[in-house]
Each structure stands twice: as C-alpha cells, then as structure tokens.
Image 1 (cartoon, helix red, strand yellow):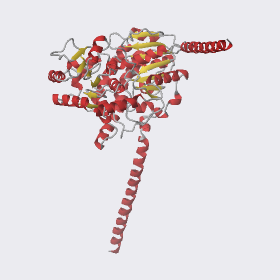
Image 2: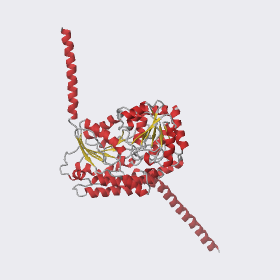
Image 3: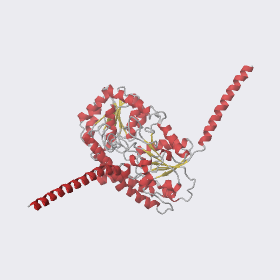
Image 4: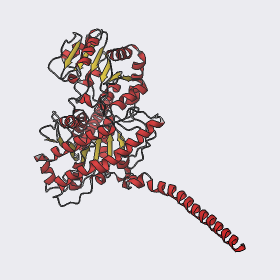
Length: 539
C-alpha cells in the first residue's frame, strides 16, 4: 500500500510540475512586446513571408499593429490590422512606362530597366500607403512614449516609413523578402566582393568570366549611384511630405536605412551565393513554408489518381499564364495532351481553350500543399524566390521560365546544382519545352539532386521561424542591437570603398614620377645651355 501511494505521489508531482511549466509559458506569453509592423508593399508573394512571421509573433503573445495591403484572414489575438485600400496596381504604372501590354514583354530588360521598375513601384506604393487616413493617425499620434517597442518593416523600397521609428523612439528590424542583395553592402557596412558575388538581377553564379565580372562591377556600382542619387531623394521627398510637420529631426533616408538594428533575409544556403556578412544579417530563407494542409477534395483526387506522376505549373502571383502568347499556349497544351502525366495549372481566366482531359486549371492553387504531394514530379515555374524555395523544400525538380529581376539568377542556381533547367521565354520553342520537360521527368539526376539540396536547405541549428523569432525578441529585449552593427555603415561611400586610399596610392607614385621627370628635364636643359655658353666664349 505504501508503495502504491509513493508511486501516486511521484506521478502527482510530475503532473504538478508540468502544470507549472504550462502556466509559466502562458505567463511569458502575457509579457509580449508591442510591435508596429509595416508591410505596405502590395505584392502577394511578399505577403506570404509577412503573414507567417506576424501570425507566429501573435501566437507568442506579442501585440501587433500591422499596416498591410492584404488582410491576414485569420483570427489572431492581440492583433490590429490597418488595411491599405484599394490595393495599388503598380503593374499598370510599370507597363505604361515601358509601353508594353503584359509582364512577359519585360523579359528583355537589363539591370537598369529593372531598377527603374523598383523606382516606379517603390515611390508610388509608398505614397499611396502613407496617405491612408489610419496611417496618418499613427504618424500624427500624440501618445508616443512607450506606445511601441519595435518597428518591424519590409526591406523593399518602402523607406519613407522609417521615420516612424524616430517618432516612437524604437529600434528597427527589416524583413528582406528577396534575400541578399549587393546594395545591402553599404547599408549594413560590409564589403561585397563583386569578383564572385553576382548582382541579384544578373543570370550569373559565383564563377564569373572576366567580361562577366566587368558587367557585374558596372551594374553594382550603378545600383549604388541609382539609390543615392536617383531613388533616395524621391523617398526623402515623401518623408518631407508626410513627416516634416512633426517636431522631430529626421535624417535622410540613406542615413536612417543604415541605422536599422537587424535584417531578416529570405535566403539560406545553398540557395544563396556564400558571401561576407555581419551578425545583423540573419538568413531565414523558407520562413513562409508551413506544414502542408489537406488539399481541396477535387485537387486531392486529381493528384491521387496521377499514377504516372503530376506536373505543377504556376508562374507566380504577378505573371499571368493567361497572358501567354497564343502560339506558345497552343504548343504547351499540345505537349501536355500527349503526356501520360497529369498537370495542375494556375490559370487566371475563367476558361482555357482546347483544355486536354489530363489538365486541371484553377485561378488559385495551394502551391505549398501541391508541391508536398507525393505524386508531384515537376514544378514549372517563373523562378520566383518563394516558389523555388518551396520546390527545393519538397525536393521537386524545376523547369524555369524566368521573366524579370532575380528569376534568372534563381534558375541559374538550379542549373548549377542540378535540380532544374531553364528555358528563355522569348525564344523557347515546342521542342525546347517538350525536350526539357521530358529530360527532367526521365533523368533521375534531377530528382536526386533536388533531394540532396532539399536536405541541405532543411538542415539548420534552428528552423527559419525559430531564428526569426529569436532575433526579433533579442532586439526587443536589448532595445536595439548596436553590438551587431558594423562601423562600416558610418563611412561615406568614398571611405567605404577605400577610394581615398586608392587615390593616394595612385597619385603618390604618379606625383613622384612627375616631379622626378621635371627635375630631370630641368637638369638636362640646364646642362645644354651651359655647353652652348662655353662654346660661344671659346670663339
């Protein structure tokens, strides 16, 4: 009997301890921070990362005020949403500027053209968001002391929101939805070697030829010039327009950007080029990838019945498959019709002409859940960062049709590591499309590499979300993170790139040589003159 009660007592102690731990965890959640989050850019793919981070922060007990172009559409506690309405259609501005009809027509732009795209969308969407009445209430609020503990903002051409950190006297964390970029060099105070780190918008890898290094250096230098001389002054004008009436001193956008505490980067090895970084640059690539949810019944039945495998086709949230040129659409459908695999295709219009029976089309598709299905064998993609991360996470080989910006570089990595192949949009033919698709389906090389890279991408000391939460709470805990900041961020550009030192190193020898040349010239001229005088005296 004694043993029975002794054992029972031990169990009660264990249960009591467990209850204490649970209550303690809830107590910690109750001490959450107050975070002002600004993710105003109206890009649906970008919002995937935003939604994942914000949802997790509220789950951990933090109080969130989110300025956003899209609703979360979830019941979250401690959450206030300031919706930017209507959603700004920046693609109309871009296609009008370049005189094109669809995004497909932008596929031949160079780096300078892509930067112009970012300039247009950055200025227009930020202006549209700042003028919103509820955003104006936050800008003009009188109760600013201890109102928020952190400004969490997207690092994507929305810099005119940074004065909110000065108004509320709080540190800043930015979330960079497109991963590493060369322009982060100056703002984070770390030199990026252009000799082996390719520009985000160039279809290069870290093994560049001499000519490629020239192009990479020229375009990287131009980006620094573009941001400081062309783009930032426009964001400064927005700051002046919406914040200049406040009784606070606001530095330039360029200076504010260099004073963020930490940056969360949507990137992770091996999907990014290894490069120098500072401790304040935290890679959390794939943070948007959540546990797969059950598929809708019709999609599940369609994929379950794909005994020979299935192909998932999506060109993302911005590029519309429905805008494909007629001749390309016709031969793509004909290739699908003659395949034994089934195809699930994100198609934005109500119907598609001459749809084969083995093709299922829908305006919206749960991409992550489809890629996680065991029968999905190939992912036909435009090469966007979010999609390629999901494809790698689920070890699905990719056929890439890159259109603009970083998509070509993303598919260059896929070819380098052997988990995908790319075809050029403007020039690809039926033979190119069919041949590449069959190679990816029938050659085990691509599946094996996808599985290997997937394993590397998943293998981390913390999950992407755990890393993001740790560092966000770290900055909140210490009210900033100057200990992570590089002094290089304080240097003017000519000091940062050592141009002052290079100038001395070049000019000093040149000046010395010039002085010696002058001395030699004068010495020789003087001797000739003396010889002439002596000859005249002798005569």
